[in-house]
Image (cartoon, rainbow, N blue to C red; front, side):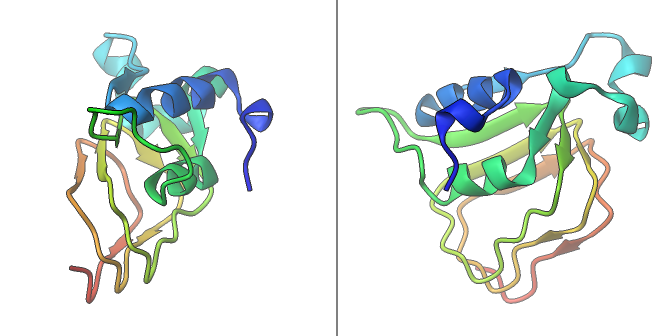
Length: 130
């Protein structure tokens, strides 16, 4: 189980935004520097571990009263493997302009909305997901 103290500053920003569904936008505003094709060079200020993404989507940080929790992240490098096969994902996932280093698995998962746009992803397995 992740603790807040173990999170990087970028991961804490995402953690704090999640209960209200706020965007965390790590892009610089320069097309060349924000192209996910070069995302392997993005440093710690633009890096989030897959285990943080997974933990949030599985409800480790509950929504604020009157808010809809969701994970909305732009311009990040996601390290590690997002493997939510068979999970009940009760929150929106929206990744924009991100680099995911490994394939993603939502195989057999029960999901809300999943949007991965303008990103580099080596593969997505969403067979039998609903």
